[in-house]
Image (cartoon, rainbow, N blue to C red; front, side, top):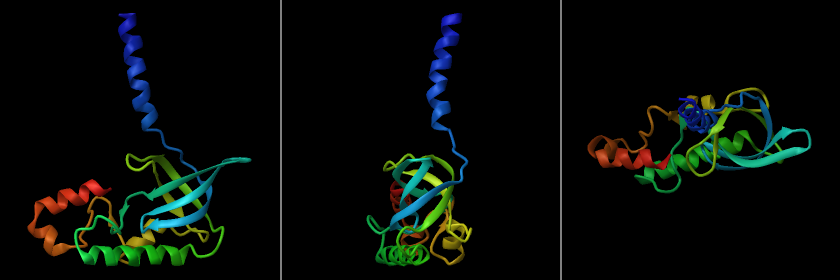
Length: 159
């Protein structure tokens, strides 16, 4: 019985570790904007130490720049990227990231990001029509998505 308990606790540890969230805020320097919902940063994790990573904005979905379903999506993707670049203009812009967790795609983390003035970047993207809630996903090619379930599946695989 004791062996079973030990084995179960060992199996549960990686799952618990994978769900770990760093509440933050963690100060980060913006290095570059990848697309509307992904920003590369240098996060200052503790004094004298930093890590460079890509941050996928939590709870929002911006249109893609590559592997798009239609040309309208690509155009919307470039507009979303330009909007974010406008907000994060200048060298060394500092942001605050919070609710940081490991993403499941492309080695990114998923987090909320606050601009230097405290506004939430994901919320601004949605307010300006450059993103949708992650749960809604897409809508950039409404004619295609409404008529072809395969397009929805392809869009789901991009995130």
